[in-house]
Length: 376
Ligand SMILES: Cc1ncc(COP(=O)(O)O)c(C=O)c1O
Image 1 (cartoon, rainbow, N blue to C red):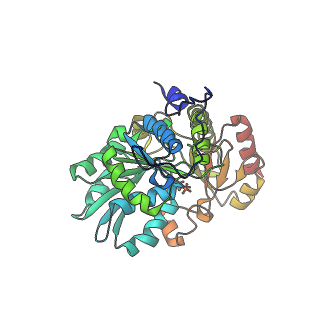
Image 2: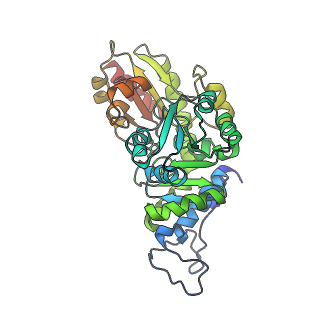
Image 3: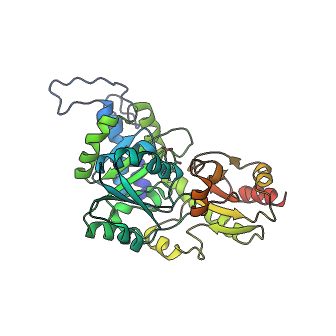
């Protein structure tokens, strides 16, 4: 089946009672256990609505099993704490979502976990591996600089040392990139973004082999970050249109990235679909679309970032990403605000850097809005 067919048809619960086309919502948090194959309970990650969504996501990411969480960070933190413990070491990409970066800085130490931040080059991942390394963690394209890591090459490094590898695949979505097929063990999504797609739910997903999911699940039931049936229903409904949404977002983002590239007030445009992007060849190999996310850096001598962002009318300055509407944010005061200014400078996150999450509007309207604000 093609991706759009998988989005619509895989993983739904047949409605045997009324013959309805949609999965029924099972709201119970209490299920009888006599004669049941397993004890069913929301925090055990095995209710019918959780399973239906996981089936769909497993089909889309080509994995055996998975878990749904109440946020992307619940998914990320549970994976790390399930696989890594006191005295262990993690090799982690440096340019990643600010919340994940902050999680490592604020919590790893307390759990006795050591970590090394590396560039997106596979050789750097390899060089950082120690005898006690228990996890290799990447994010590509990364937030907010859209760096591209060679997924197959990083996976190969991890496999050769028999270390589990995990990727944050949020920016790409399962429509544009399927890292498990390229050898990465664990695929993580903030479902709050493209999976949910309408800026109205918060959730996360972890997809992997049956064996690794069982390991992660044994910790996950203790941490308890599972997802309720109503949100599972909204997520299942949203996933049906993910293919067409992401397709339009890919097209709009490429058009906007090309347009911004020729603007004299913009120093740099980060979008993996531009031929000038350093990761373009790798992205073309491992992605089937370049995604709806881009970032750009204003030349602050020519354009005042505050005036620019306040001059936008259609595009709203807002947190999060992956929704139907185009939104903009300055990572220095949003996703990466918890990092020190020295850490931000090291990452290349300046005050003039803006991240655009491109929606499904008519692209000409978006370009007019941006041009007007840049001119103003
Ligand atoms: C790439 C990426 N990963 C993970 C997260 C965390 O997801 P959540 O906010 O659902 O916990 C975010 C949130 O912005 C993100 O952008």
